[in-house]
Image 1 (cartoon, chains in turn yellow, green):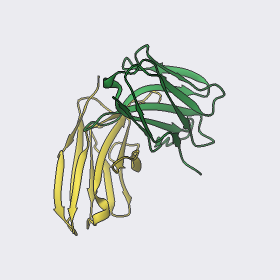
Image 2: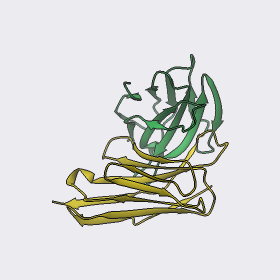
Image 3: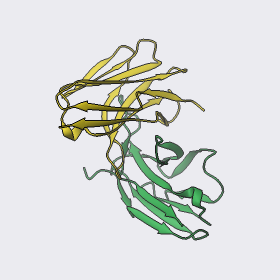
Image 4: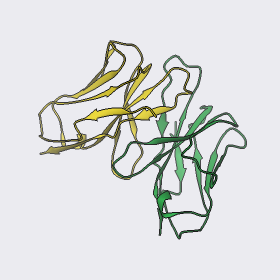
Length: 112
Length: 115
């Protein structure tokens, strides 16, 4: 099946630092989404991207849909302790009934 | 908007027992999905409904698994003769088709432990 390569696997940063993580795929996606998951909870949608080259912000979060349609990145600026969690990228192919393929996640730890 | 609701949140069962999970999607959403997530992995697609019709099933969904959405609203996922390998978080998600920028929203999941 399709796979997404998400990196880094984990990050340990100081409060106030900026963070960047990315996903790459061998296949073209039509939609990229970024989710955050806290322990024991379901993923919460952060940002959705629908067009190649699209750059979208949600507060301190910024994500971009790569122009090749095979990659996406997520930036978090001025991190705070509540940013701790696992961040997942997910891609969707057109015509796939919105079935998502997820990366393995990036575990973010923020040191106060 | 009450979000996607799943019940129970946690289920512990013995190997060989049957279990059933329930999902209530966001009220106006016509698409409903089940995903499974194991430790250290992202969610993996299991099956998908549009209204009451089950339109796609993953090969991960063995014949011990069955899902229904009888009236196009809530859905149930049943696992018969559970095995230890079924231990995972089972996630339900819903979306509204036909919108320009369709988004998938997840519930809090049901954590299954098979002893």
